[in-house]
Length: 127
Image (cartoon, rainbow, N blue to C red):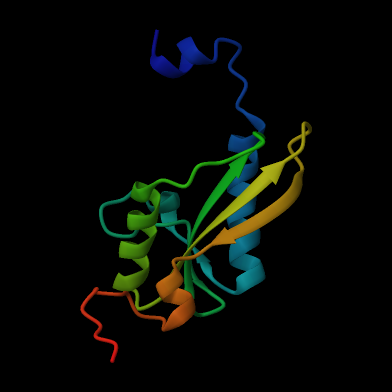
């Protein structure tokens, strides 16, 4: 018995899992970007959508929970992918109702992307 079958014996996929593919397609269409093949599971391209509004690389997340934690690993992954494409990073979290329908959506971006559009190397001197 594999891990997935053990954790989910009835074989049903979570509503968040099912919704995630639709979320990525909708984001790409809405922002005029392109979905990244296999959601960035390959060696070279990371993230879920590139070229969103011609500016952003997006990491898309869905949840039915009341809260969602953004980890440093997620931030680093989307930042590395975006900077490699000369884009700005963003994480979009979609909250779902009990039926799996989106009820709220929020974007998380690093403050350097809001301030100057360039990563802060920490060497800035202010006089």
